[in-house]
Image (cartoon, rainbow, N blue to C red; front, side, top):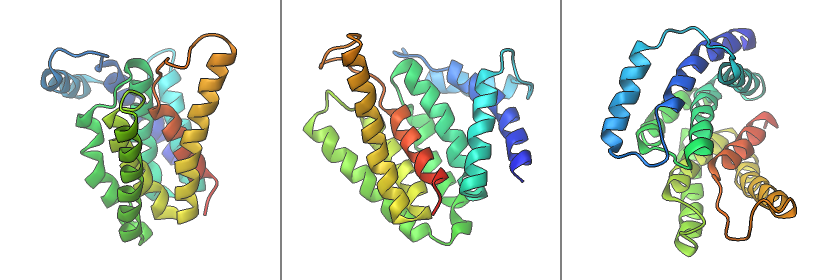
Length: 211
């Protein structure tokens, strides 16, 4: 099963690369950007492009999550990978990817039998990040709040312990990265950086630690 998921991740990784390449930091028209991304996906052949860094990373994350958490969490691994890449490159988490992922993720989590807890976890973590955004809107974007809901849904479907690890882990990893930048004198206290990848890394850690 894990090997098949890895193969699927390698193929899907080609589309992850295409999708990530379609988003820029400051688009003139987000609807036009979304249409261009959809058109690019349709025209993409399921063959990894050299060097296959994105494809291999996608396959690795998908296989690891399938092995440690189970098949219901593979969609989260795939969509989390593309969002992490886009955010790292553009400091954006596009709504056209994040928002449709809510119902899709809910459907993929149905086999866990914990959908009600997953939805509660999504609401709780999104609310927590909304408070953080309201307190310091210059340090966090609304995209992070919307991403928090997806993370809360996936982690809570596994357990509340995983939810706590995902919630705390993202904050801790982001803080450690900020400290490293300060120590290396590559940033100041006012320097901003994409937070989504650290949130997602914390979520992947929570899922891979198991129940």
